[in-house]
Amino acid sequence: MTTNLPLSGNTALITGASAGIGEATAEALAAKGANIAIVAHRESKLQTVADRIESETDGTALVLPVIVSEPEEVREAIDETVETFDRLDVVVNNAGIATGGDVTVETMPVEQYRTVMGVNVDGIFFVTQETLPHLRETSGIAIFVASFAGQYPRPGAPIYAATKWWMRGFAHSLAGAVGTDEIGVTVINPSEVRTEFGKEYRDEISEERYEPNEVTEPETIADSIAFAAQQEPPNVVFELELYRRDKLSGF
Image (tube, rainbow, N blue to C red; front, side, top):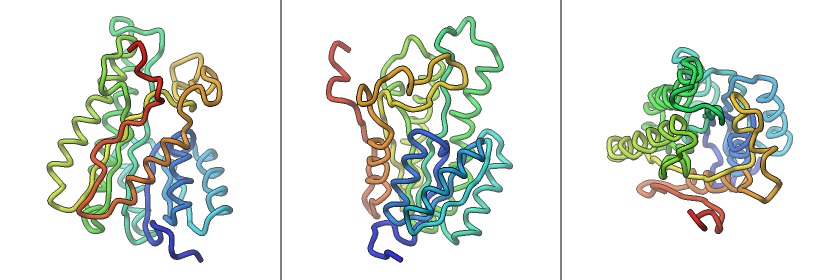
């Protein structure tokens, strides 16, 4: 077994890990030596990711089919992770869904509003709430995958943008609350990424909308998450903005 990797012996839990940024992050952290707990609601997709990780690295991948907006499911998943690996060092809050591209505040169905808020806000809170005691024991790091949309007005998606503003405010305030416990908190802000994002309520996902290399690839975001995950006390990456060089032209 390889033992000189930077995250050897550590355990990382990643939500939204069945595709896109979450899948790439699970692979990146496993390549750095971590054991991986992967969370999403699609068990078959998670199993495919787990099989690939275990065939390509020395790490173990634990599959946890979970709906993050259900607190009891989250609690059981965290308990199983710690029981399996004896520790938790890195948590990546990545799960998130987009609102429909053709809906406005006036036309958004209540069901869609509650689902988006449930995943993007409640899910973040429940995962963080359950993992903080374990991160305190290991002086671990909580990483939040936020968005360009959480920094600038997004007239076409105000509800989605609001969830990302919430995430950043929550994460930064949390950093102030738990930093004295040697828990690190990092916010990562990507702009457009070529993934399955938008599959729930949009006719076209970003993977189909953008050609390869037209926007950021998920592996690039995963590399930045892996960099943040390797920081040791007392240091932490507070916030990292990862945009293409042409992103702000004409903004």
